[in-house]
Length: 116
Image (cartoon, rainbow, N blue to C red; front, side, top):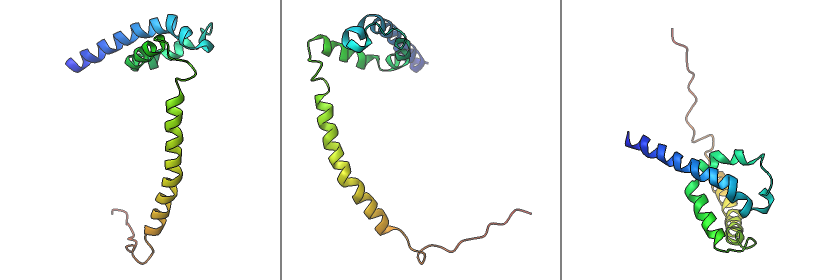
């Protein structure tokens, strides 16, 4: 019962945050969203679920973080992970192909019969 009550209040708070963010906040944070009122209701389910992140990001951007620099760190991490995957995927595939079973080590097939 307590978990349902916590979830209900979480969504109530999310609804308030979504209303305020959709009406006032998104136009100030993203210049492409100014005047685009048709797509804003599509954001409501997402804001309902991740409203703590929306508030945290809104506060960071309101403090004066440069809009051009806000995606710099994720891009650097993305490039690093791309290099890791370039190496990791061939290693995984090579290991899988080298360890696969041949026909001699597999068990003989068993014919399943229908029940009588």
